[in-house]
Amino acid sequence: MPKISKPIKKKTPAAKKKTPVAKKVAQSPKKKVSPEYREYLDRHSFLGEDRPKLSFDEFEKLDDELLDLLAMDNLDDEQAIRKQELEYLLLDSEE
Image 1: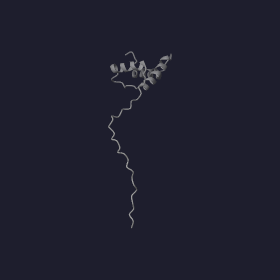
Image 2 (image 1 turned 45 degrees about the vertical axis):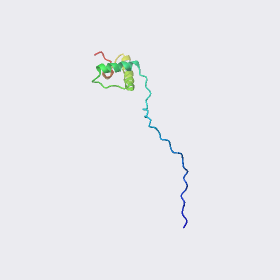
Image 3 (image 1 turned 90 degrees about the vertical axis):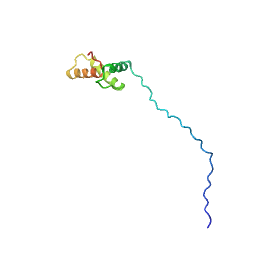
Image 4 (image 1 turned 45 degrees about the horizontal axis):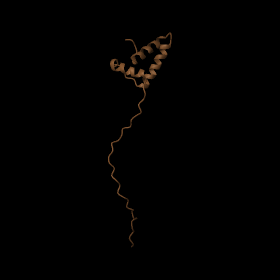
C-alpha cells in the first residue's frame, strides 16, 4: 500500500515578536460647556452637597425651562412651584 504524503507546508519567515505597547485610553472629545454651567458647578461645590449634581445636558434643559418661566408675567400655582423646584436644582435662588 502506498504511503499518503502530507501536503508540503511552505516555511514562512518567523513572525516577529511584538513588543508590548501600552493601550491608549480612548479619550472622549471634551464638550465645551457654557459659562453658566461652570458657575453652576462652582455653586454646587460650595452649596449643593444635599442636591443632585446635574450633567451639562440636564443643566441646559432645566435652565431653559427656568428662563421660560421667568419670562412669564403671571404664573399659576403649578408654574410657581415648578419655578421653585428649578431654582433649587440649579442653585439659582436667593436663599
